[in-house]
Amino acid sequence: MRKPIIAGNWKMNNTSAAAQALIEELKPLCKNAKCEVVICVPFTLISLAAAATKGSNIRVGAQNVAWADKGAFTGEVSAEMLKEAGAEYVIIGHSERRQMFGETDESVNKRTIQALKYGLKPIVCVGETEQEKIGGKTDEVNRRQTIAALKGITKEQLDNVVIAYEPVWAIGTGKTATADDADTTIGLIRGVVAELFDAKTAGGLRIQYGGSMNAANCDELMAKEHIDGGLIGGASLKAADFSRIVSSAK
Ligand code: PGA
Image 1 (cartoon, protein in one colour):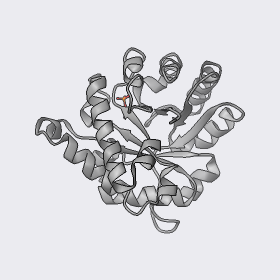
Image 2 (cartoon, protein in one colour):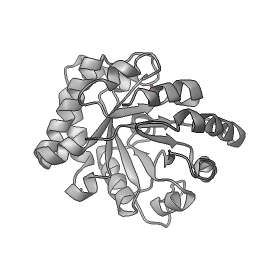
Image 3 (cartoon, helix red, strand yellow):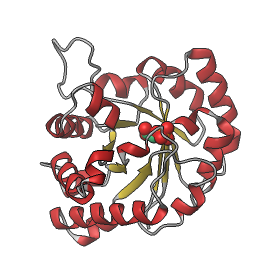
């Protein structure tokens, strides 16, 4: 049985006071969660979030990690630093990073390997753009990104990996993939993982859906066979909405 995982992606939102208040609201609302609950916060809020969630069932994640150990990498934050600050998870290869900050399949793979090396659990994002979808390339793109992201990763390491299927056209747009379409593509990704490893390993891998998932559509998405959780952007900034999505994971 795969334990569902609902992760909030705060993106570049919240400063200390707002973060503290949101976490205090979330703690009682999420305390009976049947799934893993994660909030992926900006680098500057990781320590605060780790302290504020201590003793609760909310875990903390970052939104990116450097692919090198340390050194002359201005602007990057290392896996060791993230661990020390209190992060347990890290989002890697989000489409906003791929589209605006030059992230490539290769750098996504390097960051994933680096996260695992330091015991951080990567949430690796894959997903097609609107143009790729229109061009009938959904399967091809998700296959390529999945294979590239997992290159060189062992079966044992895969236990700590989460994949987030996030169709780029659905992120922050209010346009959600239908539950059937999301399930089909996530099933395809699971099939690719089965080819790379084996069916049992693929059957244990948690794959989330992300892209305008909200309180209104979460039940339908979470009811699907292959959908093991969600990566939630906008709706993760409101305690009521995020906790409603958490409660959709059974
Ligand atoms: P959204 O973002 O829920 O606001 O569409 C999801 C994400 O970018 O991870």
